[in-house]
Length: 449
Figure 1 (tube, rainbow, N blue to C red):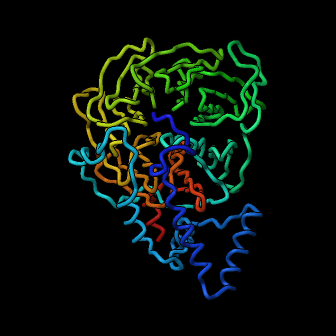
Figure 2: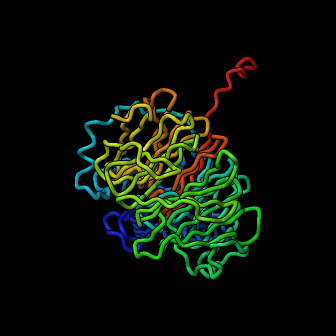
Figure 3: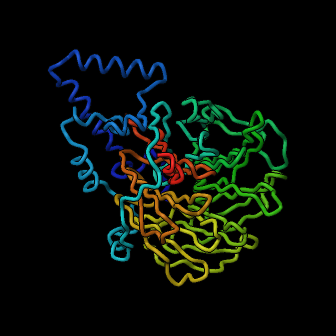
């Protein structure tokens, strides 16, 4: 993983082109002959911000034609269609291997677009999700169809889609120290932790930092339970975290770091129990549902399948041509997917790894996040900006729903019951949380019509 933070990454790849839309809007309002209209809009915007009631967009409003992000295209000098085309033409995908995106196009699966698996429900602009590192996009997690956790600058925030209310869970701007005493925990804690990645499962949360920090909190307890620093190396950033339960029910998590290490922590004993080293920085690791295989991807075009007990490499994954940043297992335990900066998501079958089952193509850039629904029917993949693709797994990834918006993506998450899909949008003007609900066919209701 490139050793840049969001603030100092190469400017052409820290895409905040939505600022152009915001600037266009400002220019339109300033140039508008109707000063009263401009003043009125400004007053409304200020009032909404001050009351934490920024104009959201509901499903009903979207059905009536309102833009889901509230962008007033009819008052801008550019249409949505034209701006979309401009983005597609000008967006620069970050690559560690030059032209990796173009070289992968010829092997990509042709999918049928137009799927309608999840329908727009609400865009909540009162909650702003943010990004620290431009390559790491796992900062949104849903623990139910109503409860979402995300990073908003230095605040780890809980958002309720039921009440549209938000609550501070953890503030890492100042000093954070554990309130419980456990062997190996850094009792002195950390100050001004820059959270690079996040994971939340049930009532347990782990935040990983840019200097290798790990902060663990049980959501049903006050305070922080455990603090640790994975390494004091200069190249220490925590790239990904995965929380899981052992067959015994014991709570564990794995941390993937830029120091080429994957570490496994036992949260029943609050101890580091395994530490594996690999030839290159590890950007993501995911454990198979049966706990017998660990998928490893990182700063190498090849991925690995390793034994999670010994760290021994069992298989090598060949096909991607750039660095990978995402991986996820299907609940069946046989198939899994990897996301790469070559703009593709590859689906693999553990029973035959000689080639991938499918190669799915992004529009703008790298595939930086992958999620399966808990029932295994759908898979969602997120690009760095503007597009989330949802595939019907049960039909061989032949059909997809393309969710199209504007802004950088901080993370995606299905609710555990599969009923909701949340998308964090990071943008100066239109930052928000998009909420989609699963479409259901209640054919039995037809008998009442």
